[in-house]
Amino acid sequence: MNLKLRALEPNDLDLVYEVENDKALWVYSNTSSPFSRHSLKKFIENSHLDIIEHKQLRLVIFDETNSYGFIDFYNYDIINRRVGVGIIIFKEHRSKGIGSISLKLAEKHLIDHAPIHQFYANVSNSNTKSILLFEKNGYIKVGLKKDWIFYNNKFNDELLFQKILKT
Image 1 (cartoon, rainbow, N blue to C red):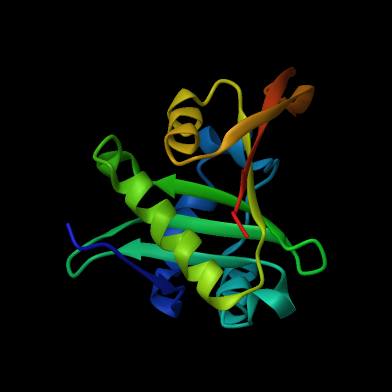
Image 2: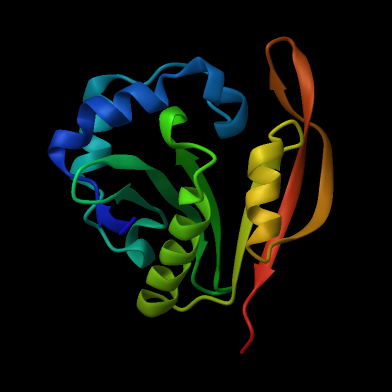
């Protein structure tokens, strides 16, 4: 599998719309209401902006034949040289190693293009696959945020992972 990363393109609108409006994922993304096609179209139109300027970046995981998911960098902080990272692998492509390959590609991309000292990830304590993914890729669990996310009429805990780069 020859995975690559690319910026969002206008023809990704349907895919982004489907993922962002999948209520099953909202507990992991802190989303509480649906996104309109219009707002997502504007998001894609602005996705060409540099992470330093825009403070976020979404990349599509793909190869010559398929799109496999997205990697998100968010809350980029140039002063403290840290960024949050999130990943979604489409359901039909999970448990095939795509997450680890993509995470490594995305980290290298950011290291090559922006000042960075650490990555962090906020992961629901019920998302065992994401916990394993981040741990497998050198992220250390450094915290537990109790009752952090209110979703589906109950509070959910969230874990904080960090990966500090060697300088």
